[in-house]
Length: 353
Image 1 (cartoon, rainbow, N blue to C red):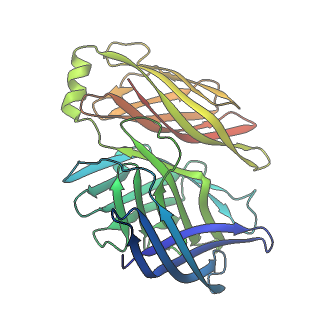
Image 2 (image 1 turned 60 degrees about the vertical axis):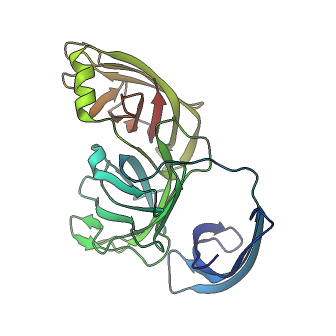
Protein backbone atom coordinates (compact mmCIF):
# COMPACT_ATOMS: atom_id res chain seq x y z
CA UNK A 1 0.00 0.00 0.00
CA UNK A 2 1.44 3.38 -1.03
CA UNK A 3 0.45 7.04 -1.51
CA UNK A 4 -1.93 7.04 1.46
CA UNK A 5 -3.27 10.44 2.54
CA UNK A 6 -4.52 10.85 6.12
CA UNK A 7 -6.83 13.74 7.04
CA UNK A 8 -9.11 14.56 9.95
CA UNK A 9 -9.75 16.82 12.91
CA UNK A 10 -10.12 16.79 16.67
CA UNK A 11 -10.29 18.77 19.89
CA UNK A 12 -7.80 18.69 22.74
CA UNK A 13 -9.58 19.87 25.93
CA UNK A 14 -6.30 20.08 27.88
CA UNK A 15 -5.06 22.97 25.76
CA UNK A 16 -8.49 24.07 24.43
CA UNK A 17 -7.38 23.62 20.83
CA UNK A 18 -9.36 22.63 17.77
CA UNK A 19 -6.96 20.89 15.43
CA UNK A 20 -6.77 19.49 11.94
CA UNK A 21 -4.29 16.83 11.04
CA UNK A 22 -2.74 15.75 7.80
CA UNK A 23 -0.26 12.99 7.09
CA UNK A 24 0.76 10.11 4.92
CA UNK A 25 1.90 6.54 5.24
CA UNK A 26 5.62 5.86 5.47
CA UNK A 27 5.03 2.11 5.22
CA UNK A 28 1.97 0.04 4.39
CA UNK A 29 1.65 -3.67 3.86
CA UNK A 30 -1.03 -6.37 3.76
CA UNK A 31 -0.65 -9.60 5.70
CA UNK A 32 -2.17 -13.05 5.56
CA UNK A 33 -2.97 -15.38 2.69
CA UNK A 34 -6.10 -13.40 1.87
CA UNK A 35 -4.79 -9.91 2.70
CA UNK A 36 -6.97 -10.02 5.80
CA UNK A 37 -4.63 -7.86 7.89
CA UNK A 38 -3.05 -4.45 7.38
CA UNK A 39 -0.09 -2.69 8.98
CA UNK A 40 0.81 1.00 8.60
CA UNK A 41 3.36 3.49 9.87
CA UNK A 42 2.44 7.14 9.45
CA UNK A 43 3.69 10.68 9.99
CA UNK A 44 2.27 14.16 9.57
CA UNK A 45 1.36 17.40 11.32
CA UNK A 46 -1.29 18.61 13.75
CA UNK A 47 -2.45 22.13 12.93
CA UNK A 48 -4.24 24.69 15.12
CA UNK A 49 -7.36 25.42 13.02
CA UNK A 50 -7.58 29.03 14.25
CA UNK A 51 -3.90 29.90 13.85
CA UNK A 52 -2.59 27.49 11.24
CA UNK A 53 0.99 28.65 11.68
CA UNK A 54 0.95 26.62 14.93
CA UNK A 55 1.91 23.10 13.85
CA UNK A 56 3.27 20.04 15.61
CA UNK A 57 4.69 16.88 14.00
CA UNK A 58 3.29 13.46 14.82
CA UNK A 59 4.09 9.86 14.03
CA UNK A 60 2.01 6.76 14.50
CA UNK A 61 1.43 3.12 13.74
CA UNK A 62 -1.76 1.27 12.92
CA UNK A 63 -2.90 -2.29 12.38
CA UNK A 64 -6.25 -3.86 11.50
CA UNK A 65 -7.97 -7.01 10.36
CA UNK A 66 -11.14 -7.06 8.28
CA UNK A 67 -14.36 -8.29 9.86
CA UNK A 68 -16.39 -8.82 6.72
CA UNK A 69 -16.19 -8.57 2.97
CA UNK A 70 -18.66 -6.09 1.44
CA UNK A 71 -19.81 -7.17 -2.05
CA UNK A 72 -20.02 -4.23 -4.41
CA UNK A 73 -20.39 -4.73 -8.15
CA UNK A 74 -21.56 -1.30 -9.37
CA UNK A 75 -19.33 0.20 -12.04
CA UNK A 76 -19.22 3.26 -14.26
CA UNK A 77 -19.61 6.97 -13.59
CA UNK A 78 -22.80 8.33 -11.99
CA UNK A 79 -24.11 11.75 -11.00
CA UNK A 80 -25.25 12.44 -7.43
CA UNK A 81 -26.94 15.54 -6.04
CA UNK A 82 -28.50 16.49 -2.74
CA UNK A 83 -28.77 18.83 0.22
CA UNK A 84 -26.68 20.03 3.14
CA UNK A 85 -26.53 22.24 6.20
CA UNK A 86 -23.34 23.82 7.53
CA UNK A 87 -23.09 25.64 10.87
CA UNK A 88 -19.94 27.80 10.98
CA UNK A 89 -18.88 29.32 14.30
CA UNK A 90 -16.69 32.30 15.11
CA UNK A 91 -13.80 30.63 16.91
CA UNK A 92 -13.33 33.66 19.19
CA UNK A 93 -17.02 33.62 20.16
CA UNK A 94 -18.77 30.35 19.21
CA UNK A 95 -22.12 31.36 20.71
CA UNK A 96 -22.42 34.54 18.62
CA UNK A 97 -22.00 35.48 14.95
CA UNK A 98 -22.97 32.01 13.74
CA UNK A 99 -23.39 31.24 10.04
CA UNK A 100 -25.83 28.57 8.86
CA UNK A 101 -25.29 27.63 5.23
CA UNK A 102 -27.84 25.53 3.33
CA UNK A 103 -29.10 24.97 -0.20
CA UNK A 104 -32.66 24.83 -1.52
CA UNK A 105 -31.86 23.41 -4.96
CA UNK A 106 -30.15 19.98 -5.20
CA UNK A 107 -28.34 21.23 -8.32
CA UNK A 108 -26.27 23.39 -5.95
CA UNK A 109 -24.70 20.26 -4.45
CA UNK A 110 -23.55 17.85 -7.14
CA UNK A 111 -20.98 15.08 -7.29
CA UNK A 112 -19.65 12.90 -10.08
CA UNK A 113 -18.70 9.49 -8.71
CA UNK A 114 -16.31 7.36 -10.76
CA UNK A 115 -16.81 3.90 -9.29
CA UNK A 116 -14.06 2.39 -11.44
CA UNK A 117 -11.33 4.90 -10.56
CA UNK A 118 -12.60 5.34 -7.00
CA UNK A 119 -12.85 9.15 -7.13
CA UNK A 120 -15.41 11.82 -6.26
CA UNK A 121 -15.59 15.31 -7.78
CA UNK A 122 -18.17 18.08 -7.67
CA UNK A 123 -19.25 21.46 -6.36
CA UNK A 124 -21.28 22.87 -3.46
CA UNK A 125 -22.96 26.28 -3.08
CA UNK A 126 -25.28 27.66 -0.41
CA UNK A 127 -26.57 30.74 1.42
CA UNK A 128 -26.54 31.66 5.10
CA UNK A 129 -30.12 31.02 6.25
CA UNK A 130 -29.93 33.84 8.81
CA UNK A 131 -27.70 36.35 6.96
CA UNK A 132 -28.37 35.94 3.21
CA UNK A 133 -25.44 38.17 2.25
CA UNK A 134 -23.05 35.40 3.34
CA UNK A 135 -22.57 32.61 0.82
CA UNK A 136 -20.47 29.61 -0.13
CA UNK A 137 -19.92 29.63 -3.89
CA UNK A 138 -18.66 26.74 -6.04
CA UNK A 139 -16.75 25.00 -3.27
CA UNK A 140 -14.85 22.24 -5.05
CA UNK A 141 -15.34 18.67 -3.86
CA UNK A 142 -12.45 16.29 -4.42
CA UNK A 143 -11.43 15.72 -8.02
CA UNK A 144 -10.20 13.10 -10.44
CA UNK A 145 -6.78 13.19 -8.73
CA UNK A 146 -6.74 10.21 -6.35
CA UNK A 147 -4.93 12.25 -3.70
CA UNK A 148 -8.01 14.48 -3.25
CA UNK A 149 -10.80 11.90 -2.95
CA UNK A 150 -11.58 8.24 -2.47
CA UNK A 151 -14.69 6.20 -3.22
CA UNK A 152 -15.15 2.58 -2.12
CA UNK A 153 -18.95 2.23 -1.96
CA UNK A 154 -21.90 4.64 -1.80
CA UNK A 155 -21.55 4.50 1.98
CA UNK A 156 -17.75 4.88 2.10
CA UNK A 157 -16.32 8.01 0.51
CA UNK A 158 -14.14 10.98 1.42
CA UNK A 159 -13.02 14.14 -0.40
CA UNK A 160 -10.83 17.16 0.22
CA UNK A 161 -12.62 20.53 -0.16
CA UNK A 162 -10.98 23.51 -1.90
CA UNK A 163 -11.97 26.93 -3.18
CA UNK A 164 -9.89 30.03 -3.85
CA UNK A 165 -12.94 32.35 -3.67
CA UNK A 166 -15.51 30.08 -2.07
CA UNK A 167 -16.48 32.35 0.86
CA UNK A 168 -18.51 35.45 -0.03
CA UNK A 169 -19.82 38.27 2.19
CA UNK A 170 -21.23 41.69 1.26
CA UNK A 171 -17.70 43.10 1.63
CA UNK A 172 -15.68 40.61 -0.42
CA UNK A 173 -14.56 37.05 -1.11
CA UNK A 174 -11.95 34.76 0.41
CA UNK A 175 -10.61 31.25 0.09
CA UNK A 176 -10.23 28.52 2.65
CA UNK A 177 -7.39 28.01 5.07
CA UNK A 178 -4.88 25.37 4.06
CA UNK A 179 -5.93 22.65 6.52
CA UNK A 180 -9.18 21.29 7.90
CA UNK A 181 -11.38 21.16 4.78
CA UNK A 182 -12.96 17.80 3.92
CA UNK A 183 -16.17 15.79 3.70
CA UNK A 184 -16.67 12.16 4.69
CA UNK A 185 -19.52 9.67 4.70
CA UNK A 186 -20.98 8.79 8.09
CA UNK A 187 -20.13 5.59 9.92
CA UNK A 188 -23.58 5.60 11.53
CA UNK A 189 -26.67 3.97 10.03
CA UNK A 190 -27.80 5.31 6.67
CA UNK A 191 -31.00 7.37 6.61
CA UNK A 192 -32.48 5.46 3.67
CA UNK A 193 -31.58 2.75 1.18
CA UNK A 194 -31.42 5.21 -1.73
CA UNK A 195 -29.21 7.94 -0.25
CA UNK A 196 -25.90 8.45 1.52
CA UNK A 197 -25.04 11.02 4.16
CA UNK A 198 -22.10 12.31 6.12
CA UNK A 199 -20.25 15.26 7.64
CA UNK A 200 -18.04 18.07 6.37
CA UNK A 201 -15.66 20.68 7.77
CA UNK A 202 -14.29 24.04 6.63
CA UNK A 203 -11.81 26.51 8.12
CA UNK A 204 -11.68 30.07 6.77
CA UNK A 205 -11.15 33.72 7.67
CA UNK A 206 -14.32 35.64 6.86
CA UNK A 207 -13.76 38.56 4.47
CA UNK A 208 -14.66 41.91 5.98
CA UNK A 209 -14.82 40.85 9.63
CA UNK A 210 -11.51 38.90 9.45
CA UNK A 211 -12.93 36.50 12.03
CA UNK A 212 -11.72 32.91 12.07
CA UNK A 213 -14.60 30.56 11.28
CA UNK A 214 -14.87 26.79 11.65
CA UNK A 215 -17.72 24.76 10.11
CA UNK A 216 -17.80 21.33 11.73
CA UNK A 217 -19.56 18.32 13.26
CA UNK A 218 -22.30 18.03 14.46
CA UNK A 219 -23.74 21.08 12.70
CA UNK A 220 -22.41 20.28 9.22
CA UNK A 221 -24.14 17.41 7.43
CA UNK A 222 -24.92 16.41 3.86
CA UNK A 223 -27.06 13.85 2.08
CA UNK A 224 -26.92 12.83 -1.56
CA UNK A 225 -27.83 10.11 -4.03
CA UNK A 226 -28.72 9.29 -7.61
CA UNK A 227 -31.79 11.38 -8.44
CA UNK A 228 -34.92 9.99 -10.06
CA UNK A 229 -35.13 11.10 -13.72
CA UNK A 230 -37.44 14.11 -14.10
CA UNK A 231 -39.44 12.28 -16.79
CA UNK A 232 -40.25 9.50 -14.29
CA UNK A 233 -41.43 11.97 -11.65
CA UNK A 234 -43.49 13.77 -14.29
CA UNK A 235 -45.16 10.44 -15.03
CA UNK A 236 -46.05 9.99 -11.35
CA UNK A 237 -47.52 13.50 -11.31
CA UNK A 238 -49.64 12.76 -14.39
CA UNK A 239 -51.05 9.58 -12.81
CA UNK A 240 -51.87 11.24 -9.44
CA UNK A 241 -49.49 8.90 -7.61
CA UNK A 242 -49.06 9.12 -3.83
CA UNK A 243 -46.70 7.46 -1.38
CA UNK A 244 -45.53 7.51 2.24
CA UNK A 245 -41.81 7.68 2.96
CA UNK A 246 -40.18 6.66 6.23
CA UNK A 247 -36.55 6.78 7.27
CA UNK A 248 -34.07 8.68 9.39
CA UNK A 249 -33.17 12.29 10.12
CA UNK A 250 -30.23 14.13 11.70
CA UNK A 251 -30.15 17.66 13.02
CA UNK A 252 -29.20 20.29 15.56
CA UNK A 253 -31.08 22.73 17.78
CA UNK A 254 -29.77 26.20 18.65
CA UNK A 255 -31.27 28.05 21.62
CA UNK A 256 -31.54 31.82 22.04
CA UNK A 257 -28.18 31.87 23.87
CA UNK A 258 -26.42 30.28 20.91
CA UNK A 259 -25.91 26.87 22.54
CA UNK A 260 -25.92 24.00 20.02
CA UNK A 261 -27.52 20.65 20.84
CA UNK A 262 -27.38 17.58 18.61
CA UNK A 263 -30.86 16.17 17.97
CA UNK A 264 -31.14 12.43 18.52
CA UNK A 265 -33.28 9.52 17.35
CA UNK A 266 -34.46 11.31 14.23
CA UNK A 267 -37.28 9.82 12.16
CA UNK A 268 -38.80 10.84 8.84
CA UNK A 269 -42.46 10.18 8.09
CA UNK A 270 -43.71 12.13 5.07
CA UNK A 271 -46.61 11.57 2.67
CA UNK A 272 -46.19 12.90 -0.87
CA UNK A 273 -49.28 13.39 -3.05
CA UNK A 274 -48.04 13.90 -6.60
CA UNK A 275 -51.48 14.92 -7.95
CA UNK A 276 -51.38 18.53 -9.27
CA UNK A 277 -54.81 19.25 -7.78
CA UNK A 278 -53.82 18.09 -4.28
CA UNK A 279 -54.56 20.54 -1.47
CA UNK A 280 -51.93 18.91 0.77
CA UNK A 281 -49.14 17.63 -1.50
CA UNK A 282 -46.62 17.22 1.36
CA UNK A 283 -47.49 16.30 4.95
CA UNK A 284 -46.05 14.44 7.90
CA UNK A 285 -43.40 14.83 10.58
CA UNK A 286 -39.69 15.05 11.26
CA UNK A 287 -39.44 13.69 14.80
CA UNK A 288 -36.59 13.78 17.32
CA UNK A 289 -36.47 13.07 21.03
CA UNK A 290 -36.30 16.81 21.64
CA UNK A 291 -38.94 18.05 19.16
CA UNK A 292 -41.54 17.05 16.57
CA UNK A 293 -41.64 19.25 13.47
CA UNK A 294 -44.94 19.12 11.60
CA UNK A 295 -44.35 19.42 7.87
CA UNK A 296 -46.96 20.94 5.55
CA UNK A 297 -46.81 21.67 1.83
CA UNK A 298 -50.03 23.36 0.77
CA UNK A 299 -48.84 25.69 -1.96
CA UNK A 300 -49.40 24.96 -5.64
CA UNK A 301 -46.21 23.57 -7.14
CA UNK A 302 -44.99 22.06 -3.87
CA UNK A 303 -44.28 18.83 -5.82
CA UNK A 304 -42.60 19.08 -9.22
CA UNK A 305 -40.51 16.82 -11.44
CA UNK A 306 -37.41 18.33 -9.77
CA UNK A 307 -38.45 17.73 -6.16
CA UNK A 308 -40.67 19.16 -3.44
CA UNK A 309 -40.84 21.85 -0.78
CA UNK A 310 -42.91 22.52 2.31
CA UNK A 311 -43.14 24.64 5.45
CA UNK A 312 -43.01 23.72 9.13
CA UNK A 313 -46.10 24.43 11.21
CA UNK A 314 -45.60 27.03 13.94
CA UNK A 315 -42.26 28.29 12.63
CA UNK A 316 -41.49 31.97 12.21
CA UNK A 317 -39.47 30.99 9.19
CA UNK A 318 -39.36 27.31 8.22
CA UNK A 319 -38.63 25.45 5.03
CA UNK A 320 -38.24 21.85 3.92
CA UNK A 321 -36.46 21.16 0.63
CA UNK A 322 -36.43 17.71 -0.93
CA UNK A 323 -35.86 15.60 -4.02
CA UNK A 324 -36.69 12.09 -5.24
CA UNK A 325 -34.16 9.25 -5.42
CA UNK A 326 -34.05 5.80 -6.97
CA UNK A 327 -35.20 4.69 -10.44
CA UNK A 328 -38.89 5.31 -9.67
CA UNK A 329 -38.89 7.78 -6.75
CA UNK A 330 -38.59 4.95 -4.23
CA UNK A 331 -36.68 7.36 -1.95
CA UNK A 332 -36.65 10.98 -0.84
CA UNK A 333 -34.08 13.19 0.86
CA UNK A 334 -33.57 16.81 1.76
CA UNK A 335 -32.81 19.43 4.40
CA UNK A 336 -34.84 21.59 6.77
CA UNK A 337 -34.58 24.90 8.62
CA UNK A 338 -37.10 25.97 11.27
CA UNK A 339 -37.11 29.10 13.44
CA UNK A 340 -39.46 28.27 16.32
CA UNK A 341 -38.75 31.40 18.35
CA UNK A 342 -36.59 30.38 21.29
CA UNK A 343 -35.16 27.48 19.29
CA UNK A 344 -33.90 27.09 15.74
CA UNK A 345 -33.71 23.63 14.16
CA UNK A 346 -31.65 22.58 11.15
CA UNK A 347 -30.87 19.21 9.62
CA UNK A 348 -31.17 16.60 6.90
CA UNK A 349 -33.63 13.76 6.32
CA UNK A 350 -34.30 10.81 4.00
CA UNK A 351 -36.77 7.99 3.61
CA UNK A 352 -37.96 5.04 1.53
CA UNK A 353 -41.43 4.32 0.20
